[in-house]
Length: 214
Image (cartoon, rainbow, N blue to C red; front, side):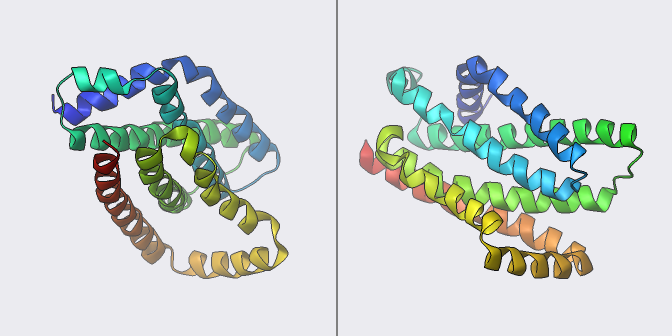
């Protein structure tokens, strides 16, 4: 097994105590289901939630001084960082699949049809949002540690919340959604590619930041 996969596995084992906090996703799915929200809205909201939950690994790392453990397993710094990015992505992907399954079951119960194109669009947009949030957060956490970076790491969440609550943003978002629905294939491709580019650049910056911190 590659070293970065070992680090990702270690992160999953470290986060197993936080498992029940992810059950809040069930509540979110049910709430949006009763509101008859689209699967796209649910995917975007869950991406925000998962980014918030998954970042707790940095808090646990700092609280338990896990960097000593990382140093004892003889892995390169690049693998530590890449393993954390792999952990974050797998966290998102597994949670996304769980949300889709839950939403599909709830939609069947309500007699609502869920289109595959809407799921793909929801995935691409949620992946882009997740990449933007974590892409900003990760280098900060690797550079400053959780305690010092946690305030700055709230910035992308505040931006997402602003988009949701500020009327001018809502109007712009509504116009954007209308244009998206006309050009779904292009949006799906562009969003996934943009998300991958953001994560790659974030990883490179995080490696440099973590190396300087060391």
